Amino acid sequence: MANTQAICGSFKSELMLGAHQLGTVTIVSRTSLTAPTTDTVKAALYLASGSLGAGTTAYSATSEVSGTGYTAGGVTVTNATAPSTSGTTGIWTPSASIVYSSVTLTTSFDTVLIYNSTQSNRAIGVYTFGAQTITAGTFTLTMPTNDATHALIQLA
Image (cartoon, rainbow, N blue to C red; front, top):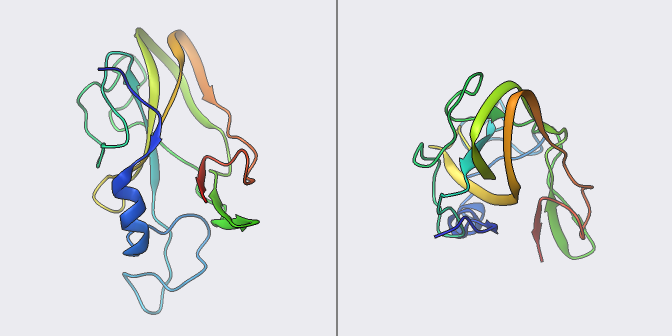
């Protein structure tokens, strides 16, 4: 089975349970009534032969890439933009590109899993792109405009 792009189903219900604090701190955290916190979001790369999709519930090393310069679990995502709305659509996009520096990944990969490492590695979304390999280089995922048409997460 191939990787398929989707907002993870578990993420949708966890939002209503208050399990995720994305972006700048705008409310008092569920972990402290006096010191608001923001969750750490990470991005892990997966092989083209993986089977991630809407049913993915958490980060797993199964089918994750490996190679020189790549650390299991991926990289930390810049999470400084608070979720907002554009019209009637809830939106959120990381505030900076996701960058994997000085890596060699020779096995074909085509997917990034965005997940919340603060909250038991809960999955947020699976995003696919054309198959890639990298030899001693930098791989950058440029983030889209944070609006109702392009945001990484769009909940209408």
